[in-house]
Image 1 (tube, rainbow, N blue to C red):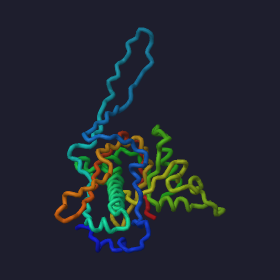
Image 2 (image 1 turned 90 degrees about the vertical axis):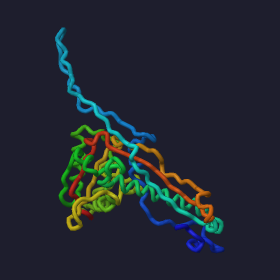
Image 3 (image 1 turned 90 degrees about the horizontal axis):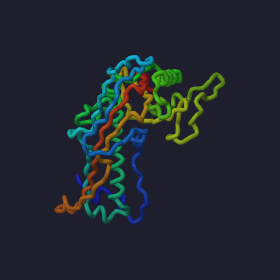
Length: 296
């Protein structure tokens, strides 16, 4: 359905503010979390070395044992069957001419934001098949190799320490770690007080949302994280993520194409948004999943 002048009456008035209030919506979080991004329009394979060599102490003129137990495999991303995220909006040329603002530019930006939201929804999900849709971060094929901390109740700071300790014991590089959690869980943790009524969590509280941290680890917030269980027994998940071990293959970033010829007979202009991504974990063991977290 095309956008006509009747749909934008508020923008055609003689006096109108030179700004347009857009709906509130969370900004994209997955692609900005620190994941590695590779640009490619064809399938890409990322080789991995599985296991370790086992050097030994060998004396002079002694036989050096051969180490043949290490294997290689690869993570293949962006198969030719992978679908794209697409959207199309038609506008009458009257609406473009009579609007007090650059309506096509406003809608382009809004469409791009909505497409980014669709990417986030898929990225933080437990769905996807890796063939036509990217597998979500919480897909079983990923989480089966995650280290785990079973919360089984309300998330506490002790659980965060347990997850961080697990990362330490598994030799995970600590410099790039990031907490992935819902806004409600972060708010609940920040409200914890000691016996004197003072807040325990103070690091990052005074900064902007992008600068929030827990135990010195940056926090990424999302309302789109996959949950588990039925409605009556719904449980949330929190992830201590190592973004550098996640690889994103980007065919097309969300971009708008303006077409003024397709709907010429209707005197309409079309805006088309297309993007195509795939992603996967090169080292699932570098992530710690906190499960069975009671929603707040």
